[in-house]
Amino acid sequence: MAEERPIEEILNTIGDEHARTVLAAISREPRAAKELSEEVGLSLPTIYRRLELLQEHDLIKQRTAIADDGNHFKMYECNFDSTVISLQDDEYKVRIYRRENLPDRFSQLWDELGTD
Image (cartoon, rainbow, N blue to C red):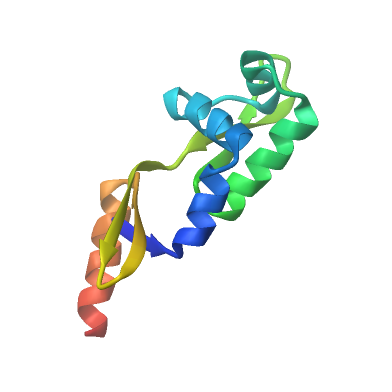
């Protein structure tokens, strides 16, 4: 699925060096904020601010995980496969190609067919 967003939103988000660092780390595999902090050498408050920024623009998703001792914590992961920036008719556009599962995509396509 491709989704268009205003280029300013995406460029401002990925223009932030710390946001890019966090996004690159979780694109390899999901991680908790503490793991990210240790891996990339940024403070936890900085990590949380960037995670919030990335979530605000729907570039990552979070899920709750359960540790061996029963404690709950958040895991963060990248939720897109790629982005494409294009120039069409003197206007830049950003397309985000999302990761999605097949049943959800089928349901969405079916809904779109029913509305046209």
